[in-house]
Amino acid sequence: MSRLMVLAAAVTAALVLAGPGSAGGRAAAAGGAATVPQRIISLSPTATGTLYAIGAGKQVVAVDEQSTWPKDAPRTSLSGYTPNVEAIAGYKPDLVVISYNPNGLAQSLDRLGIRVLEQDTAKSLADAYAQIVQLGQATGHLKQARGLVAKMKAQIAKIVSRRAADAKGLSVYHELEPDLYTATSKTFIGQVYSLFGLRNIADAADTTGSGYPKLSPEYVVQQSPDIIVLADIRCCGTSARTVATRPGWGDIRAVRTGTIVRVDDSVASEWGPRIVDFVRAVGAALKHLHPGR
Image (cartoon, rainbow, N blue to C red; front, side, top):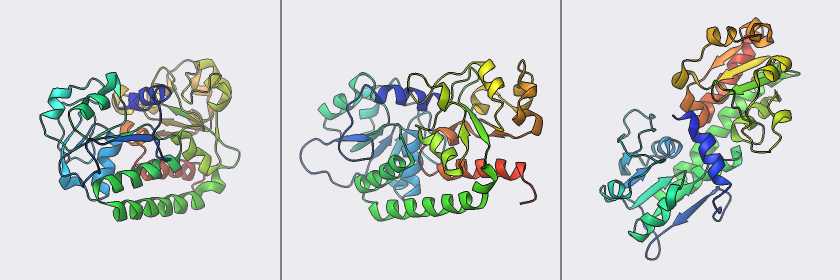
């Protein structure tokens, strides 16, 4: 299911009024100035990873069923997509972090006096970094959050500097689902490819400007990308073998050279600390194309 989070949240973001700041979210606090929360619920896998990365893990009392990282997070049956307000309130949280606001969830919790921080799908890496800082400020870990952002930027810059030259003139196809939903350069996913200078084949096919178009098999074959990134391996069992058996796909350059990157669904769909792992996977694919460098 995690591969759907980017798609669902992106569609919803167009219908939700964005709050103040550049973090792409909104904050609602009941009854005056907010204090440092001691009982946090995360209904966002991205926020869950960020909370633990900035040192707020001890404040987390429950996370949603989609939060698989880190493994020691208190995973529950709570859902960020079909939320049960009573079940959430039962944990007596003083902060609930969400990336999606179905059926007015934020407003329902606000009426119960529960503070909500909504962080929609990041539209860019800058948005992703801003959300980390915002979460740090909301949980009393601002210094750690800023340190995490600085570390992520340094790690990403190092990887890109080593491999960007290898990307010259190359194209990439990022697969969110086997039915060929993908992500363009207008998304945080696509910005990772832009860092390396890769041409994203989805850009020219995004006629609606959603950032997440559905491609046709014929289009992908015609574009013949140099790199294929599969972000649907856990949900759907997609692999280099299954891709190669698709009609006509055996002629695609990435299939012929074996440059097919398998990235865990959650790593490729979360815009928190795991972005570094995603960048590292892309760098490894470029190294595969130029093993001598």
